[in-house]
Length: 473
Image 1 (cartoon, rainbow, N blue to C red):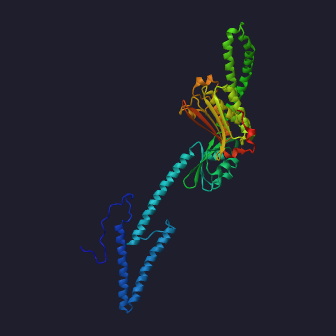
Image 2 (image 1 turned 30 degrees about the horizontal axis):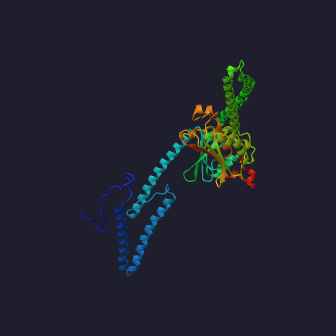
Image 3 (image 1 turned 90 degrees about the vertical axis):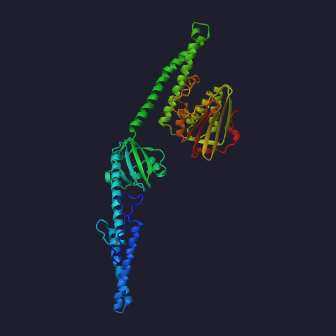
């Protein structure tokens, strides 16, 4: 049956566009063309009807104008409905016209339904995240782009003394006023973490770590490290006290060995004890060195000494070089290159310990006839101390563990050379106290290079004639 004039037969539905959701009622290009064509027919009908009516009364143009005005008012009615719906989509319902407006309203309602589904899904995800985060033993605080608190879990509330919704919207630096956290937060890079006393209990120490995510948002993790710090303090105290207590019997033992050793050198009744006594003296000296290193490491970890000065590093290196020569006894070729005007802001005993441990290790693990080179120089990145040797070298898999306490690559060789296994651990802690870092490179059978890097703000230039700072031969 033929379609009525001015009407369109219903188009066959096209398959969904690839990538659209199942059941998506979005109009295809064909549907849009049909709707636009229908709207043009309506406009033409209005114009034709108005013109004919005006022609009958002798005013065709007026008829056209009235008809087009009515059509425009009709369109404005739908625009007004659309505007009201956009302002209050939950209170206003869209009309259900035919044609292009029907397609537009249908698409908008479909988008609204999909957005509601997405919002429900996102709300479920956020709710699940908050529930899982609330169950964590560590505190979690979501911080906005201006540093304001947006959300926190119960653990954070307990550790930081947050007051429910009262503290939401308050900037986190206003609640945690410790200078270390203020600097950490203000820096903006959030490297590592910072430890501060809890704002509600000074006996509780918390570790704070900020992790940026999303758009200008940050997640702050709060951990209670009080028990860990108490255990570390107990361990340091035990090591220090045990080392002190061991010194007394060791001093007595060495005193008796010093007294009877001369008798063992003669052909007397103690002659047969010559080798055991010599071995006991060697082992007692090794034990004394171990105790001294343990005490030194305990002092470094306790961070009790805060006094710092501008150190005359060339003079420190002169002492280290003399000790290294005494240890080598001419068996090695010692080379030195020192910037005599380059000083360092730090602690004399600790800097001497850094240089001495690295230099003595190089001598200790370099065969006779080998080379040991010391270099002290500065550049735009700070000051650097380099020890390079032609020794036995270190395997690549051992390098990451060298600064661990009592770690030895070759236990037998280390003990034979008098090593305690604490030297590089002392170097690491002393460097950390000076904001420095240790870089190690080595190759088996070729040698090793140990480089200490100190930051630029610890470097001090002294205008002193180089000849006054020259190292001895």
